[in-house]
Amino acid sequence: MIRYVARRIVYMFIALFIIVSITFFISKALPGDPFSDPKLTPRIREQLYEKYGLDEPLYVQYAKYMANVAQGNLGNSYFLESRPVSQLILQRLPISAFIGIQAVIFGLVIGMVLGIVAALWHNTLWDTLAVVVAILGVSVPSFVLAPVLQYWLGLKLGWFPVAYFENWIYSVLPSLALSVFVVSTVARFMRTEMLEVIGQDYITLAKAKGLSGLAVILKHVIRNAMIPLVTVMAPLTIYIITGSLVIEQIFVVPGVGELFVQSVVVNDYSVILGTTIFFSVLFILALLIQDILYGVIDPRIRVSGAKE
Amino acid sequence: METRHRELDPDLFRSADIDAQEGERIAGPPVGFWRDSWNRLKKNRGALISLAVLVAVFAVAFVIGPLVALHSPYDQSMSQRYLGPTSDYWFGTDKFGRDMWTRVWAGTRVSIYIGLLAALLDIFVGVVYGAVSGFSGGKTDDVMQRGIEILNGVPYLIVAILAMVVFKPGILTISIALGVTGWTFMARIVRGRMLQLKDQEFALASRSLGASGLRLVWKHLIPNSLGLIVINLMFTIPAAIFAEAFLSFIGLGIQVPEASLGSLISDGAAELRFHPYLLWLPAFVFCLLMLCFNLLGDGLRDALDPKMRK
Image 1 (spheres, chains in turn green, purple):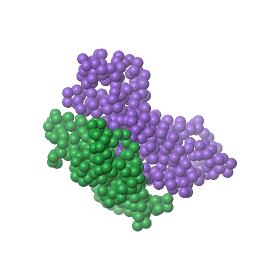
Image 2: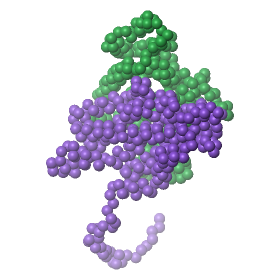
Image 3: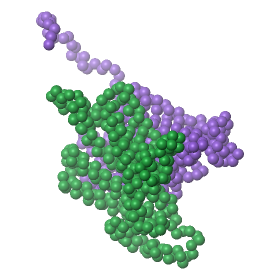
Image 4: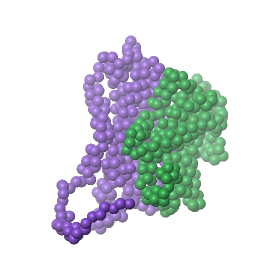
């Protein structure tokens, strides 16, 4: 087990190294640089280049950048008062994290309830209803849903503020828009797993032991059906990250996703790089935790993974 | 407990009269894999309706829509701004007085084009990569799998966004970006299938008859993985359509004056308060496309691989 985890962590660092290198060279290949403003005199431009180390040869810039990243220093923004990128990200992270985690928790709870109800009352109206909700949730993208929620719950009914972020009430609509996909993914997954588990021999055994129906469902069916739910962790993390890019735009939430999109628009290299690295770290960590958890829960995965 | 008493007489224990040849009789004409799958698909109403709707949307977007259009998707007319749906402008006009009917279908064409192109890239990169990796095994496989693991480390929409800022934003760049990152799942699936198939008897038989590696893969292993490949394609296509709309929505995809469903939805969302039809029409077409591809994908999975059905 320790060898397996160690191997995964080594791969994680190799992947990160390559990702950081690729993003560095991609950002250098970007058309236009942050100081291409024709109003700047050549002398000022030179000074700016010098200040940010842009006049040095590419490999020097690369080596410096890598050394800095290894120490957690992601450079300074070319705009935004040259603030450190890591500081910008950390400052905006709590808001994004709060909205994302709230969406996941809401999605998990509602999705599991839907999935469990659908499986227990298989082939009834409830089941059909849950399946329809699940399919619609996958088909209606968050960027269609978000403006509709904004308009309907925010503007028409006036229940929630439509934009910005000041306190909890502002997070409701963004989280809701993000969570619909989570609800449908989890509901679909839970339903199929429950149906699979209900048919297993150990459930028949539990019933034969004389356990009541409720005890069987709570102790055996739901518990076992939840195990494979670990595998949706990484896809959901990606979804929440990419979803935050558009949701934060729509609701004008000052989060990390909004920072990334804005930095792409204004060619703020160091922020683009920093946020990409940050997102990649998050995602790779989620993958790692998912694999380790799965290895702990289901030894078969670990063994076949080690053989590979 | 009560048991029904039944008279037992020797008659009940006579051996049944069964023709030994009966088991050899072929009840119906032999049914091939694709025929069989089609029969199963035909029973799935949701998938069939989706297929019909998709064909209809294709027809309207590519043939009927442009044929009956009264206006060009680019013509602006400041005196005709924000017209709701009328007999002249069926889907109304946008803030520049452009005809929404033609713009929505132009956007749909972009979506369909992206979906199909992503599917082609999936086949030519994903399947080939997976086949080579799985079939070669050993060191080659190891290196190729590590490559995929690394590619998987970055969320693909972020790669797409980065590619989008390096090259000129547009339909081609979106396709390339999707092709660079979208095929890894297919490659994994095909590789797994290759590993599973390449040591089976029919592969051994073909090899012992002197088939080359290429022939073995092309004639035996790929055809035996086709079901799996088709199922995966049906999930790649909506994912690619979604990715394009997503990029266009945040302004990094299709650029004006071209229209994409994503950019139309984005424009519509901004005007939702006073001109809701600008959001509803493209959003409806987009959700319809996604829904139909998802339902058809589910149906195909059940039809092509009944074991996966749950």
